[in-house]
Length: 149
Image 1 (tube, rainbow, N blue to C red):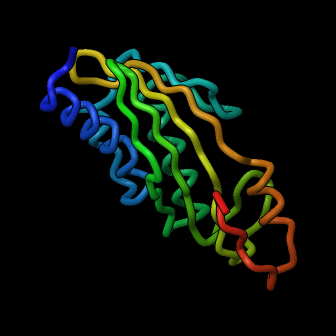
Image 2 (tube, one colour; image 1 turned 90 degrees about the vertical axis):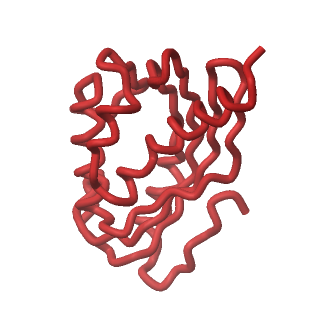
Image 3 (spheres, rainbow, N blue to C red; image 1 turned 120 degrees about the vertical axis):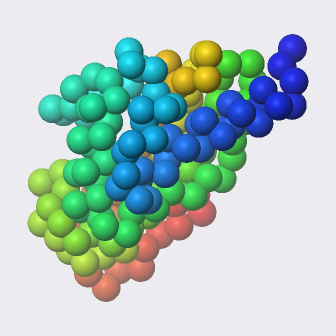
């Protein structure tokens, strides 16, 4: 059974994973991702491993420079950490075939991370891209629906 300190450390490692989405600085991945970290599923064109994730961060931040991640739930059980998020940003650059709309978007995501020896070794994730596409295709003056509402 893990102690509170192990639980807190595991949580800190996983939450650090999300900071580059907000800041664009992916250097934290040198500390929190294992060299052979597995990301599933990969986005089209993404390479496996920390370098592939760093490239994805650059794409997200180009499309939405104010991209942010808000955590609704963080649940730790053993070496697994489940995180329910709302990501948001203003669509200011080309993204997934859509030219900038200037619209504020919100999207639901769910992630499961496996942490071993102080590093994330695997991440499984789901994003509500259908909901995101509906927002990007909606009229410019359409309100942004709450991600989890």
